[in-house]
Amino acid sequence: MPKLVVLVSGGGSNLQAILDAVATGEIQSQVAAVIADRDCYGLERARQAGIPAYLLDRKLHRSDLSEEIAKLIPVDCDLIVLAGFLSILNAKFIQKWPNKIINIHPSLLPKHGGAGMWGLKVHQSALDAGDSESGCTVHYVSEEIDGGAIIAQHAVAIAADDSAESLQQKVLHFEHQLLVAVIAKLLA
Ligand code: GRF
Image (cartoon, rainbow, N blue to C red; front, side, top):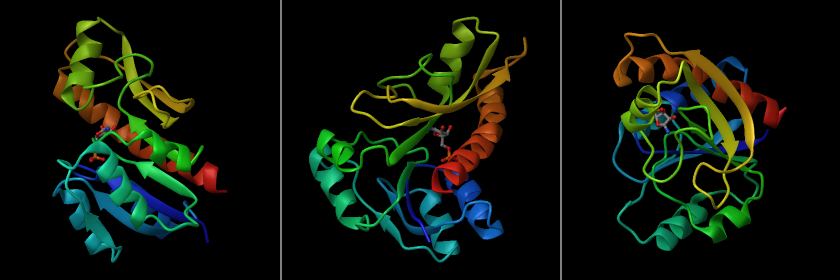
């Protein structure tokens, strides 16, 4: 059975979508661990599902945090999923797992990505640009923030009366579907 590790920093709704898909068999994998860089509801979701949940300190230096995370990942891990994980991993960590680390980003990359582009800022940026559509992207993690090879995207139309909050909700719905579909495919 392939092994997954999920990294979270927030509410963990993408993690929940993964856990639900594992339960139904859509994703044929075992979630070996959930790792958070701050106390967050994602950890609670892992505990409720009976999955080992680890809390690390995001204030650690980037390389120390990356090293602590690496220690918690089984050597035979097949995929590391950044599901709303906000800390930046160092080059050593990324090079240790070539093409095995993926991230979900709430825009159509390369638009509205890069350092500091997370949460509502991403959606406000799409609105400020006057874009007619936004969406979500699953990509491999490289050393360039949000710059790794794109695996899949899903577009979402922006309505004239959308706010950053409403757009975030619309996009999040499709993030869950896209992330699950990509994981299922990568592990098949
Ligand atoms: C999602 O929009 C994800 O794309 C972004 O952070 C949000 C996390 O949501 N990077 P959740 O914690 O999965 O609910």
